[in-house]
Length: 391
Image (cartoon, rainbow, N blue to C red; front, side):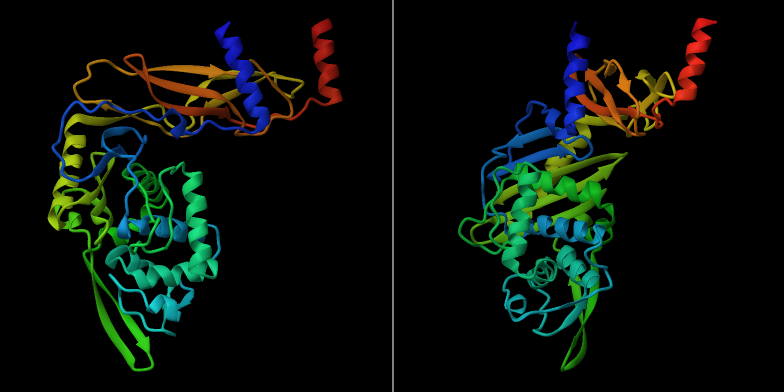
């Protein structure tokens, strides 16, 4: 009875074009240890599954300072992916962009740098001027870009967030939370791993080309984590008078990716120590186990009025399962499939899900889809089938 009910519900979802996201099944492990963090807010998240491993006031909305630029970088990389610009495109600096204070690379009004060089300045040196220049380049104005930032935040379910600028300077109402920072950090690192060529670079340089000539300007990464922590991959620092000291730190060891965020740490070095404490906790207590690979054959689903009577169905993507290291139990799987399909059927049509359980609790899920297309049966094939049946 339960299977019939699931099949009916899933069939309706498929007809509506609805998909079940990984975040819909977000899991959270209970904090079993007090890590004694002094930061006002903190969170530790597994980068692959999105599972929350530790949190402390993670939904408290606070000024994020330059950690804001995680969203700025996400929109930049999505823009390049979507063909809105090329990394080699020239970006001209406006008077507004050149006027930014705080951390900057001292771009001058009228100066031109490539989109790649601007992005490098944002990711390595946390350059406010470069961030605003790229915002104007992508959206026409910083205000229009900020609107896109807020729209993207809403799509990611960042309910604690409201952006007012593209760089993170203290502005009334410019707020986010550790939870939301982890969300956008995961989206950036998971979908655009190429950013690590910048976020793991300790020192680099750009060349200013202005009316005064050409001068080299050195860039030093603001994220000391990449020098101090084994496996560090990024991501973004931030500090202002209101925000105090913030950090979204990412690291990978033995195939396990972690995101640790602290906000409003009371001093410069403490934010790094507390992020390292969070990362140490995660690597010491959890591990990643690989589930079924993409293309694993789950079974077959009947096809009505098709050239084939059944179609083979497979897992749509690889899946990793996060498990506590002390757990002695193995994870289990359960597959739920719709009862039948009606031709024509496209390749890659979702027909159900494979759900992973550990000690009775869900720890992950992956879509199951058709491996090939099935055309609607033609008259000749139908007649042949009828003759076979009669004979």
